Image (cartoon, rainbow, N blue to C red; front, side):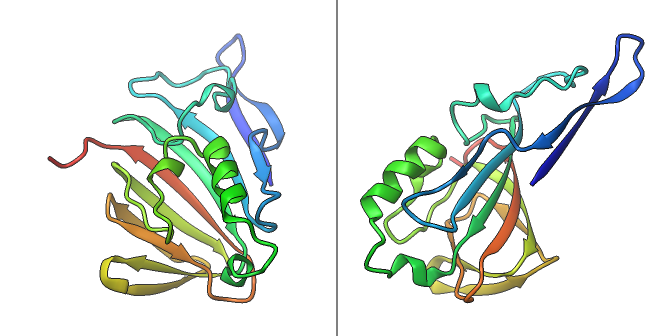
Length: 176
């Protein structure tokens, strides 16, 4: 996946300051086909980065503070990979905690989770199911969007093919 970042030169002219692969990408060894990418992030109140300096190396939590953002792209392998005898859920959890701190700790054993964020999700390719409380499922395919309002949910790839979804997480104040 290619990431193009714009910024400004010393005269204030718009320029491309970076063009290449997403530097913070991880292909999981514990679950082949699971790929996590963090193309960009902002902190609350942060001004526009005029030089396009990569903020992702400094990110210590994928869960943004209220007013902060995270742009995350996930590729999910087919759900059948989770029932493969070679799948090690302990190793996957360990890898998730390294790759996705802040969110990984919120994921329940069945994959359900809720975050204090408003998430914009866009299915880039493939088919995936959004599961909400009580097993309510909504199938989604390429081009579909989801606005996730801090609800408890899980993502299920019941197809036989990988699916890639882009998420923009916007940190929000949790409900009291």
